Length: 103
Image 1: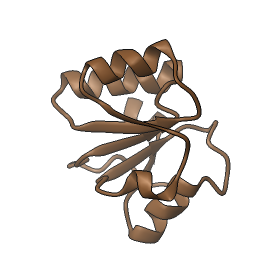
Image 2: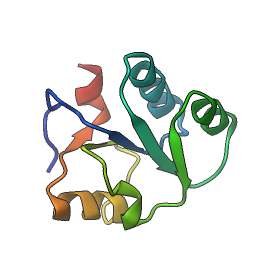
Image 3: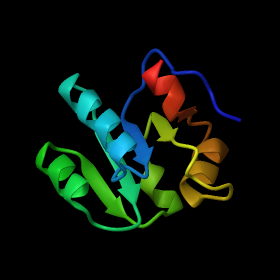
Image 4: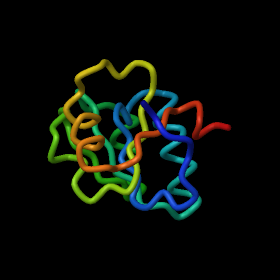
């Protein structure tokens, strides 16, 4: 189950941050002053651009990647059993869908 967008997101961890939709959300959040981090399965131009803007990026999906996150943002492309999503839920970190971030 996912949560609606929390008022105070805290540091945001975006799973699949290198994708076109998620990288766009990350860009907007960075511009708005949010602390942004995220993960993806491979390097890309989007990953490099976000790093240059100050985002902390992890390559690979691991439970420890969400440590310190206030919110975890996911898209429908993220499959059930993702270790970051499972770790966030176990730690009580809100998991928010991309659609809620765009609303």
